[in-house]
Image (cartoon, rainbow, N blue to C red; front, side, top):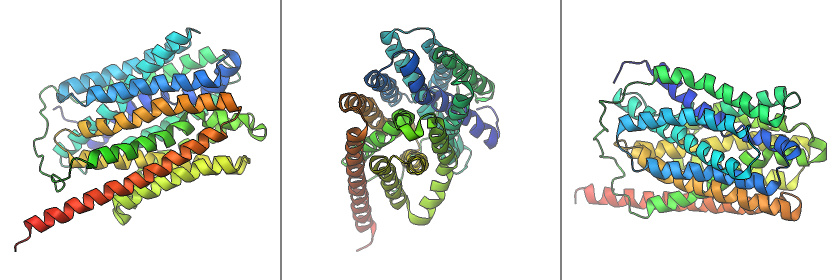
Length: 398
């Protein structure tokens, strides 16, 4: 592997996730009101397009789970970066709904590459070079992307058509990925790490399915705000025209939160920190249900941004450390569940919003799912605790 500093490697993978998820994925959220007004995009179609994006994300996660070759992972990572640029620009070149679905699906594939392949390559590099396998800075890219899309939206929403706005986001994505192609190390001679011995090798087979269900619920809690937060804000008369502020606050909360959650987990333990993040995410949804005041929605966005990134970063880093020989495989299994929720939930909530004329019922359903995920998280923790006790009993001398 070619020599590169830790800072350069972190920045390389960070730029990749900002481009593929932070921009190519999240720019759709501030564009929904613009497309609704100028391109006759309905709430239902907006939800279906988000579902198509996450179908691509889910497909990518499933594909990545079968790949072990590091050189191939690096090549697909770069392909995902290029796809993010092309699909974003192409969204502004057509008004065909079938083509929109295809483009958002392909964009979802690129997001999976940026998130999972980027995280896996980074974790492999960190472990190989004996650095702490902490991904807090990497996942900060999601928040940075939200901030960039929010700041860009306020500058261009009244000056450019919805189609031209897609091209602007594509250019930003292109500028971000160019350094990655030059800085990414050569993985062609690399082999997966072979140290598979971990303290949790005795975990029963039920552990991962329960954890996947918990992460599925977290995916639903995340995606509804990620897709509809600005649309929800703009639908409230008192917040008309201020949706970008809400989105900016979510991004500003998200950017530093992943690193802060690493510290919380060090102090309280990863399970306690994860449960706190789940409950905070549920609280952000509850606030949207009970109040439509500007300050309340602002607080909801703040809590949402800080909590969802904590769930993602802590969950994926945890399973990555448990399986250092091929960290992208367990990450992909969890992300498959997360992506499945992201594919289903926006379509359901978008349909409910169009049917009932508001987002309240969809938010109530999302809150219930998030609380179910919290229970599943406690269940997974109990499974691990029992496994640890059984391992200790077997290894202790009589």
